[in-house]
Length: 95
Image 1 (cartoon, one colour):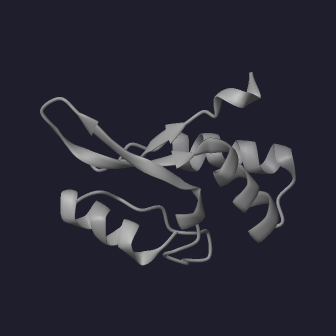
Image 2 (cartoon, one colour):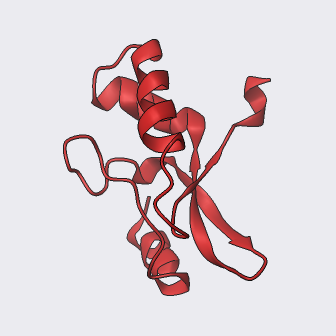
């Protein structure tokens, strides 16, 4: 993801949360960002592609597909950390 997109997200909502990598890499999942969601009467949030997140978990962190799904479900999808919590897009081509 280019720096302009990151800056735009921060400009729209300084409280929007980016996902850090397992190893603390603050940019680990930037390539999985597919957009910014706006919600009625709420702040903008970051939208991550579920399939891209899983790809990063498998490739960058050497997880099997099952390990990546379990990690994602519990540590990412299963975590609510306030209004800045990211949204995860389930890519429609998987259906």
